[in-house]
Image 1 (tube, rainbow over the protein chains, first blue to last red):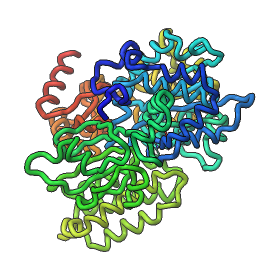
Image 2 (spheres, helix red, strand yellow):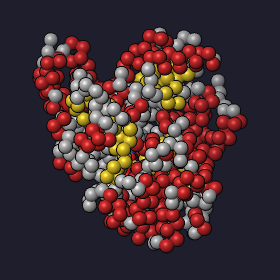
Image 3 (tube, protein in one colour):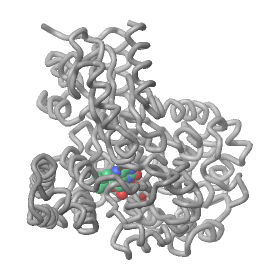
Image 4 (cartoon, rainbow over the protein chains, first blue to last red):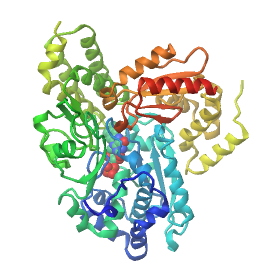
Length: 415
Length: 160
Ligand SMILES: Cc1cc2nc3c(=O)[nH]c(=O)nc-3n(C[C@H](O)[C@H](O)[C@H](O)COP(=O)(O)O)c2cc1C
């Protein structure tokens, strides 16, 4: 990790402009791809790199791109998911601020690889001010011929549109994002068909996370083997681990995929402040089931976290200190999903609302252990019965808090 | 009452529509432009948008009731959004929110009688490493403390 120019995210906040990016070797990968590689070669290089989607589901990017039907006459689109609403996640914000050109270069290479002339960057409405840098970087890229007509003097053209959301976590779900982009409520679609086959305006569409795309230039410039070598064989590269909550140095740490969770928290983020101890850790955004302190000696990669009954998700780590009542954590978790459920699927709409009502009652006037079982059974009624994974996120995160901190919760609600 | 955006807003709306393969897709950007100019989306403005984008008026109303950043009634000159999800909660978001409630004399979702402030409690704003965080008129203010928030409120009052 000692070669700073190989990092996706520059450590300083002040070198985001095109001139700085070019000095770091920026847009060399785009030039290489567009002038010396066939689109299919770009796709296979990224497939070999085992770049797994950084938005939460971990689907291999190269494989997804391969699902797009071979270039035909109709339109096709690329959408960048910049909705970043998963609680505890703030890494994409940092890419917009420090490395907007890495995202744009990744976008150019990906659009070339899948034969897309038009891309939309869906930015959550609350990031409108932060995305000022992205818009400035796009203007720089346009003026320099990295996007727009005849990119780098080739036959390839790329139009990029920034689209702002308006406050809805669900719009981060890829099919809800497409609905929202088309000018409707962000309600997830039935899958299949997947967006690669039937997406925006019913055309083949690739949806990728900001960090996924920002990792692409490195792969093309230095090769798939280099990328795999920086992470794990089946989960390549570095990741932007966001650490917040009870640590001395909250922030984003770019580290190899597979770095142990405890090391990220203790060595990089400095561990809990003086006199505090770790009580629980959310490893990958609020939807990732919470871990107890004895569970955090885990490599941070998709498969290891799934094996431990949690998930790597967005890699947003939140450290919960001793002294934080778990009933409060349960409450804010239930509140989040009840508020953000889009209402399309009855199990999620009704289940999340009832989970919240019960938790509110427990906080107000106490209750019995059976109330906790009722919360669990509501979660079971949601899990696997919804079109999109928001419901699963609600069920599994609530379940983990209730089962792993049951004793404390029973004491807290007993009156 | 009928609605008409200013010439500048209309030009921005036309540019937004031109960016999409179908006019209907410009719904969110167009609503942002109108709210930016008028502060909220009136019934008349919503119908104007439906007409402009050639969509059913109910589609505009559906969007307005779904997306939390749009408002259908006038709000304050300044909007304070306080995050209260996990990282901010651990950093004392409830205390900050309670302090603002006390200072402004309104609860989340309300506007001060003088029309200066609207207060909302929101989910994660993606600024967790600077918890507790909030946004004022879309600008990040983080980390927030009682002192920083008190100064901010005074400054905004002085600006009006
Ligand atoms: C409720 C919900 C919210 C999501 N929010 C985001 C988000 O904010 N950003 C993101 O990139 N992916 C989000 N996802 C995942 C997307 O559905 C999708 O998997 C991702 O954008 C694909 O890109 P990737 O393969 O590059 O990760 C969300 C999923 C769900 C179910």
